[in-house]
Length: 119
Length: 119
Image 1 (cartoon, rainbow over the protein chains, first blue to last red):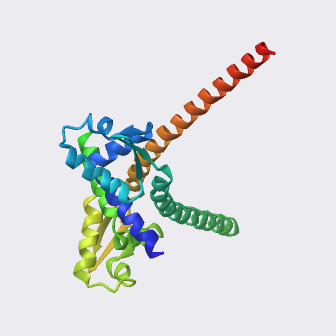
Image 2 (spheres, rainbow over the protein chains, first blue to last red):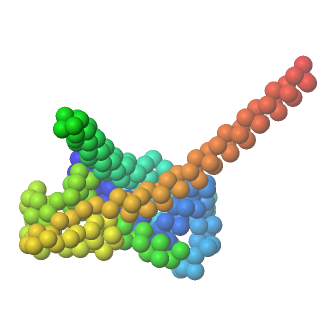
C-alpha cells in the first residue's frame, strides 16, 4: 500500500520533533485552542502554526474555527497507525524468538533421549 | 529528559522513511548481512549504507563485522521507546474518555433521582 506507507512517513516525521510531541501530549488531555497550545512554548505564533500545520497534514490533529477561536483536537486513531506498524515488527521479532526457543527445546529433548540410549 | 527527547527525535525520523522501515521489517525476522539487506532494493550500495547509518545512529540497528561480512541486527528495545511514548499519549486520551464517561453516568444518575422526586 504506497498510500499507507506515505502516510506513515508523514506521521513519523511529524512525531520526530519535541514541540510537535508536546502538542500531541497536550491534546491527549483534551481539545485546546491555538492560544492555549502556544502558552507553554517560548515560540513566535507563526512557528507554532507551522508545527500545527504539519500535525494537521498527517491527520494527527484536526481543528475547527468557531468565531475567532480555532480549537484543535487529537485524532488518536492516527497514532494507532504508527503503533500498529511498530507492534507488527515486534510480533515478528517475538515470533522469531519463540521459534528459536522451540528449536532449542527440541534439541534438548533429542539430546536427553540420546543420553539415555548411551547409558 | 532532553536526551530521551533527542533520542525519540532520531528514532521517529529514522522510521519516517519506507526503505528504513523495510530494513527494520527484514531485521525483525532475524539478523542479515548488508548484501542480504540490499537484495530487495533497486538501490546503489552507498544509499543503502546511508540508511543503515541512520538506523545505527539512533541505535535501532547494530552491526558487527566478521571477516568481510557485516551482519546487522535489530535492537527491539529501541522500538519499545517509540511505542512507550505513543502508548503514554493514548493512555492519557483514554483516561480523559473514562473521566468523561464517569461524568455522564453521574449526570444520568442525578437526572433519574430528580425525575423520581418530580413524580
